[in-house]
Image (cartoon, rainbow, N blue to C red; front, top):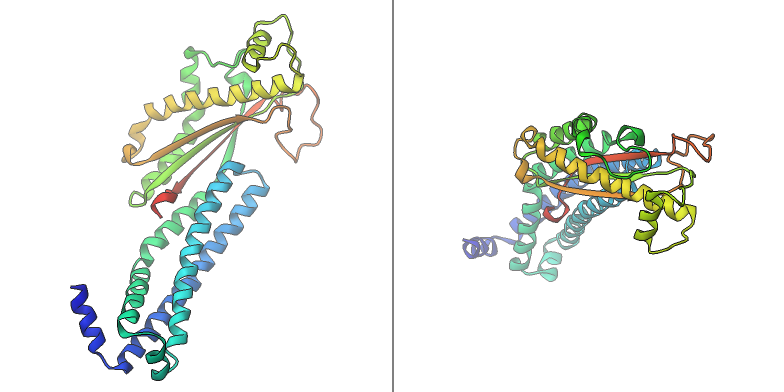
Amino acid sequence: MFFFCMFLFVSCTVQKQLTAARNASATTKKIVQKESAALDTIQKTLQGKTENKAVDSVVTVEIQTILNKLNSRLNSAQQLALLLDAASVNKATLRRTMTAATLLKKLIVLDSFNNARKQREEVYAMLKESVSTAKYRMYHLAAFFDPGVYRIPSAAIGTIAAQFAPVVDSIAYIANKYPRIPREARIVFVGYSDNTPLMESGALYKELTGILNNEKPTEQELNQLLSDLRAKEMVRNIKLVVKADASKFADFNSLTVGYMGYGRGEEFPSSTITDYKPRDERRRIVLSYWIVLPLASAL
């Protein structure tokens, strides 16, 4: 079929080839202009969310990777359209610049790009909604952890499920709204600690020094590890909750879910709070970030 179409196209007059090239280029440039504006809007929204720490730095990198990939596709289509513009100035230019067979191949590429417009717009709509509604949730450690431990007791699963329900519901909403798009959910927990020292005679101190393989770690090293372990413990538990709530998803098996947990130690959680104390429960928290994104590998 392809060779038959090529034969027909090659048989066309140069004027018809010229018209086809100009029309395809004009259509592509209009589409690229519109879609570039849509991606610029998402980029600006992401910048604002990042500055306000409504999106974790790890997730920001993933969103930026997706935006770069989408923009690269638009740039490629734009460059091909400009190439056809240069070739289709007049009949003589077209004859001199490329053969009819080469022109046909380039037109097929642009036609495929132009016809995929609606699919891309759905991806943009999903990305825009996900970035626009991105937020974080703060969990005070006292709600999950007993003093002096970094593991959540199994008896607390009921409390955990209730605390994580808004996260799971938000993910399910976006995932169910865009079933035709290959997508992935990202859930990130970031742990923080204050400057409270650990008693060297305590069990937790001994356990942490064993993990660090250091008998005399600094207070900062201990609190960094503790914040990291607590974030990872939150990840372990939300995995259980997501699995238990699989019925909230229209097609749970089609959704890729990625989890990450890491600690920032004694770093201040918020840049807007200026009166943190060395020992301050407002610093003993875990922040949760979540978002549903188009699967980058499928774009």
